[in-house]
Length: 128
Image (cartoon, rainbow, N blue to C red; front, side):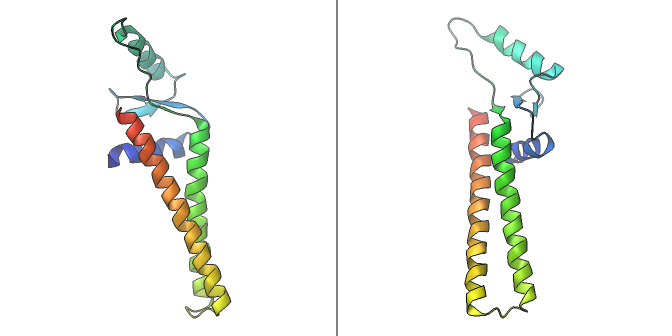
């Protein structure tokens, strides 16, 4: 499961503006317009018969990649801001700034949860 999550994350970062499909034989995602992608799509269509419905390969759209990258970068940004503010105040921020740091840290947690949830959902979809 972890390898599928890492595979999805790597594909989102490597090719954020292009769609990708999973080729199980290669164990990685490829562009549907590439030679490997066309071969995989053709093979799926050849295997499908009337008694067996056509299964669509696991696909990662550019919109999914945008949402994932935004959540991941936003989480990192909030963590950097929190650490920077903590270092700026020498670990003893005033109460108002401490509440701001806690709020920003909550935003980082939410973004991390969103990114992991997106990856986990996509990895589960790839397994079915």
